[in-house]
Image 1: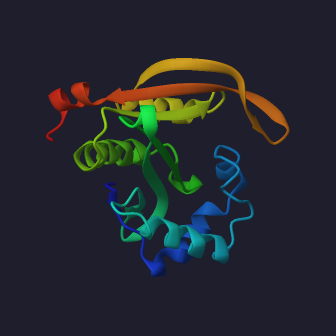
Image 2 (image 1 turned 120 degrees about the vertical axis):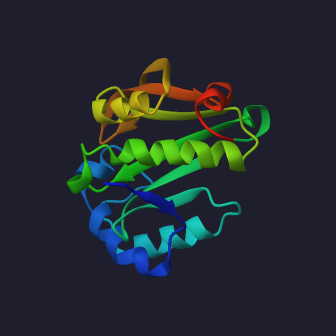
Length: 174
C-alpha cells in the first residue's frame, strides 16, 4: 500500500470526519483536535489548511480517499530554522507503515519548501507507536521533558525527536 500527500479538497470532508472522529486519535493530539470531530470541524480544518501559502498541512491519501493528515509548521524568531511536524491517521490504518511513508514524503517537502535545517516532532512518553514511526523515519531522540503535557486531567512526559537537513541531504534528493 502506497500513500500520497496532496492539498485537501472540499470533498475530502466526509472521509476526514469519518477517520478523525475517534477518541483514540484525539487522545494523542493537542486539545485543538476536537472530539467528537464533526463536519463543521472538518470544514474549518480544510479551510485552514488551504489558507496557508505555501501549504503546511496535507492530506494523507490511500486509494483516492483521505485517511489522515500531516503538517509542517515553521517556527519564528530565534527558532526560524526549525519546523514542527504533526500527523495522525485513521485507526483502521495503524500499524501498516503508512505514516512512515507520509513522514518521509513530508520531510522532503519540508526541506525543499521552507528555509529550515531541522524538523522536529513531539509525543507523549506513552505514545510508543508514534515514537517508532519517528525512529523508522530517521528521526533522532533529542530530549525528554518531565510532566510538560497536560491532557485529560493527567500529566505526561514530552519526548522530542528531530531530523536535521544535513543528514537528509545525504539520504534524500533536494
